[in-house]
Amino acid sequence: MFQGTIPGPMRSIVREAAGRWPRGPVYVPCCGNFTIERSLAGLGFDLHSSDVSIYTSAVGRWLIRQPVGIRLREESHDELGWLADSLDDGVGTVATLMLGTRFLASVGREGLWHERVVRSYREQWKAKHAETVERLSSSDIELASYEVEDVRSWLREVPSDAPVCSFPPFYGGGYEKLYEPLDAHLAWDAPTYEPLSDGDVVEVLGAITDRPYWLTASNHDVPDLHRYLRGVVKATPRAAPFYVYASEAPTRIVGPRQPIEPVKVPRLREGDDLVGPLRLSLLKPGQFNALRSRYLNPRIAPGAANLAVAVRDGGGRLLGVFAMAPSTYTPDEVYVLSDFAVAPTDYPRLSKLIVLAAVSTEAQLLCQRAFSRRIRKVATTAFSNHPVSMKYRGLLRLKSRGPTGEDGWKFQLQYHGAMGEHTLAAALEMWAKRWGAPTTKTGV
Ligand SMILES: C[S@@+](CC[C@H](N)C(=O)[O-])C[C@H]1O[C@@H](n2cnc3c(N)ncnc32)[C@H](O)[C@@H]1O
Image 1: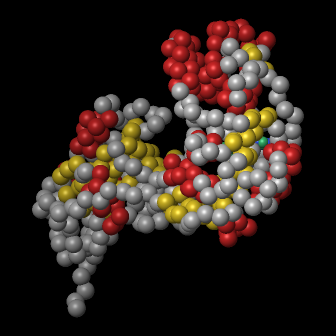
Image 2: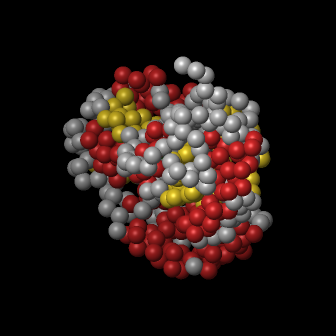
Image 3: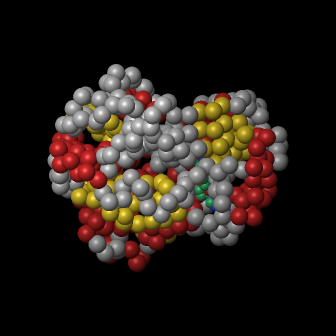
């Protein structure tokens, strides 16, 4: 029901750890989307929650059956008067805020996209609002209390021996920005507090962990809490891990599991001559995972592929694989999620042939069929320790270069190019002329 970025296994860890605590009150500061409350539902605790944001406070007050106390700002009436009937100081207001997180940021902004977002919410408002009210009404979260209060003062007031369970901000600043579009159009009795500085965050962590029962989690590894590390949760190969720290609990490691299926096709090997014509064939997800695990650099975290394709030579031998997904923001573009060549072979530049095959007219047709749209362009990202990617150089255009957030790589390189400007046959011819010379075999 609520928006949330906390993976399911983490909720299980929270439930398991807190399940050992004595029944009674549990305090949940910085409760955000009520993930902790949802994880602990039905365990017999009295849940006392708090936060400072307009969104969380609307939900919190509604859950304890208090008037929500949020109204449209005077200056927003002209643009947003159509919301007025939905603001009923109860579940209707909460539903409006929830939907508001998706479109209020576009109100008053120039540009076709923003105008379209607001128009579509306005036109479908009645149905969307009624649907959200209905979903909210089936919520089973029960709170013993909710308070709008700064975590620093709240933790000084709650009993020092009562359990605290919280995912607080682990760095200063940031959360205030998240709900700016709601605050810009809606007025309420907002609390006054100083945004948390990095120093305050350390202090808050101290106040949480300085008690007999506690649990906290973050997407940052906190060296000072290492001896309390109870779980590491990585939901997908590309997701940032979550670290769970707790006073006491069993240790859990949750990693992504991918289906693997054997691929029986022969592969090009050392000593084999590559022969035309090239052919493309579709791979099942498990086959793609198996080949990716075998040939892709293990330091590159794989994403889920929508379309995975094997490139084979005239002898039916596998030369490599490319995997595509439709680009999110550019309708006629595909994104190359991964492309790699088999190894070892006698062809040191075989990976360039896979790129050429991935942008061929035949690949373009496969993409158009898979994604039901016209495809004209291709884009991809390379992680490299060099300022250019040797694989894409000469084939795609380097659009931007920046530092990476990924361990072990210096540069993140964005490449773009056209799709469908040559056939597979032309790709092989071009590659054979420029990059297809095999390594000379020295006598044994
Ligand atoms: C990481 S989120 C909480 C995640 C949450 N447990 C959930 O279920 O999604 C951090 C929360 O801290 C709140 N917050 C930020 N500064 C705060 C402060 N000074 N006092 C209390 N809450 C604060 C934010 O509004 C946000 O809801």
